[in-house]
Length: 109
Image 1 (tube, rainbow, N blue to C red):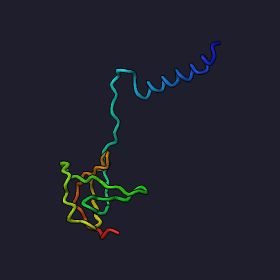
Image 2: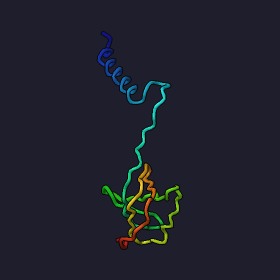
Image 3: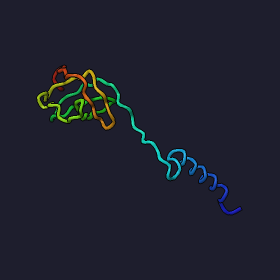
Image 4: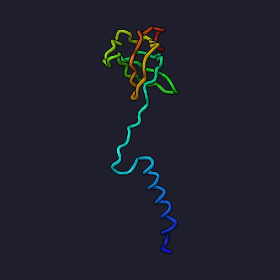
């Protein structure tokens, strides 16, 4: 037996098989995988014209858009206020497509 040929040959073949299962054969078309829009209510604070949300143990800003994806919702007029949107769709990339009017629920902390 050649030094290490059988022992490492099996591991190498297993790796190649796993790559084919995950990525597909070379030249094979693959479907992109992305999450679907999620219907969600969001509450956040407006700071510097952006809607900042605290969820899942972190703070991040949401790219709020209207139904035809215009980026400017005029959030500047709500600077320092906490807003709640009851209906909207959260998309990949933290894009939130607003489907309801904003409700002011208080001041930001």
